[in-house]
Every structure is written in C-alpha cells, then in structure tokens.
Length: 366
Ligand SMILES: Cc1ncc(COP(=O)(O)O)c(C=O)c1O
Image (tube, rainbow, N blue to C red):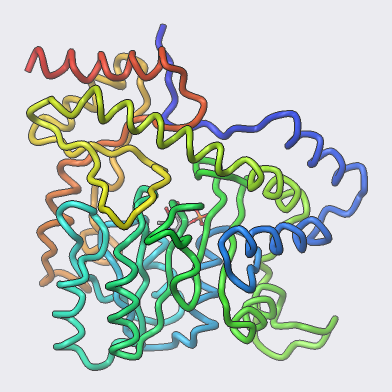
C-alpha cells in the first residue's frame, strides 16, 4: 500500500540529543540556545541581527509593529499566499492592498506593483512573499521601495536559504520573517525568526516579544509574550546546520520531476527565473483542466498532495466584504490550477517514481 506524505520533518539523533540536553538542564524557557540560534541564523542569512519568535505569524506581526504600521496604514502584498501574510497587517490595524502576481513566478509582479504605486500615494510598505521557496524579483521590488520611500518586509516563511542574485532572502528588505512550522524546510516545532540589519528595529522587536520590557519588570511599551522556548532553540540550531543539505535534496527532487514530467501537455512545471536559487518548499504544477480530478486520483493512490491555495485572500469569507469589487485574475486562475506534489528530503527515488507514474497514468486515461 502506497503512503507518501506531502511533508515530513527530518528529525534524527542529533535533534533528540539536543532537546534531551535542554530537558536535562531544566531551563526550558528562552535561554542560551535561543541566543545562539539567533546568532547562527543571522550569520547564515547574512544580516546583523535575528530575533526568535513563537511562530512565523508573530514574526510578521512584530516586524510590522516595529516598522510602525498602525491604524489605517496601507501595506501592499500578494493575494496568493497563506492568510498570515495579510492577517498580520490587519492585526496591526493596517489595510492590505493586494497586487496581482506574475504568471510565471506566482510572486508579486513588479510591473503591477508600480502601477499601484503611481496611483496610490499613501502606501506605507510592501510585504514580498517568496512563495513555494522561489525568491521574488527582489532587485526590482527593492528599487521600487526605495523610489517610493516604503518599507520592505520579506515573508520568508517558505524560503529558508533561498537566494536572489546570490544573496539570501531575508537580507534584502528592512526586515525578513521566517516560520519554523513542522512542514517548513527546517523546523523548531512551532517557531519563527525576524532578520534585519537595523539594530534599532531588532531592539524594538526584542522588547515587543517580551512584554514590552528590556529590563526585568519595567515595561516601556504594550508588549506580548511571543518568545521561542529553548527546546525550540536547540532544535533550530541542529536543523539550521542541516538546512543546506535539506535544500539540496529538495532541488534534486524537483529537477527529477522536471525531467520526467515536462513533456506532459496539460501541465507546466515550475518556472525558474535566472536570478533565483530556489529551495522548493513546494513543488507546484500548473494543471490546465482536471486539476481536482488529478488531486483525487493521486490521493486515492496514497500520494499526499495539496492545493496552495484554493482561495486567494480577497475571496476569503472574512475579507470578502472589503474586497468585493476587486479582481486579481492571475491569482484567481492559479487558485484553480496549482497542485503541489511531495518534494521533501525524505523521499526515495522509488517514491518519486511512484508519484511520476501516478501523474502520467492519470493523463494517459484523461
Ligand atoms: C507565506 C507564509 N507566511 C506566514 C506563515 C505563518 O507562519 P506560522 O505558521 O509559523 O505562524 C506561513 C506558514 O504557513 C506561510 O506559509
């Protein structure tokens, strides 16, 4: 019986040993492991500072707070992303302004971005999402944020280690936000990280995630408890040391799929722009017709697959009223056509062949 999960965290003896050491120490809350994890992550991304948080959503929210997003502030982002990208803007009192995505990369389209910026004068910043582990065109987007004097926050939740023009994501914008949820390219269970070259912004984030406090029991601002535990910190340090290896395996799996599936007439394999080193958080096909039937066929055959995302954000029930007059045709088409296959590092060549055969068999009979 075939049973291939869509995602599976890679946890080995080193992770168990690191977590056990924290348990044995009795110091479970934020401590030395989180501090070292932050240092190591900052060095890896190539930024001055990294601040660990409780998850990717709180990383985005706190970064926006530190960047000064408040009631009524307008922030541009993509409608084709996980809900947390936009809900973090709303939780600050801000208003997401959606911009349609590029046909090929599925990321923010810099041309459409500039069209909005030429018309709308009161935009405060941009959240650029590196969807499925493919970096946005950061050179173009950073050019626009400088030209229009906006902040740039990178949502790197799906793109640990990805590069644009040889430079890691999370180091291009004013800030970057990462997630370490178990399906991600590396995990701490739940967890997140903010990256920045601005020490003042990092200081603000550190204060906000710790009850608005820098000195014990003195509270300078209304804050939160969004700290990462030392168990997460210990896990994160081991996972970070293996990240390059994990990402290389994902790229190899993706290259094999490309080689074996590119000839099929009804699907597009992922596009790779020349500026990007991707990390394939997802391997996502664009299926022209019968996408839902293919999904069901693969699932019936024991192959985990998923649609990221079936509803663009402007069509989500809780946002529908706000955006009832809006239309983002590329995002809407993608929601009808995308299908993600397993690409995680634990897949064997036999698993990949089973999945490829499944896809080919479906199209033989349709
Ligand atoms: C693009 C994107 N942004 C933000 C998040 C939020 O991260 P978390 O689930 O750790 O809160 C996710 C996680 O799924 C994501 O995919």
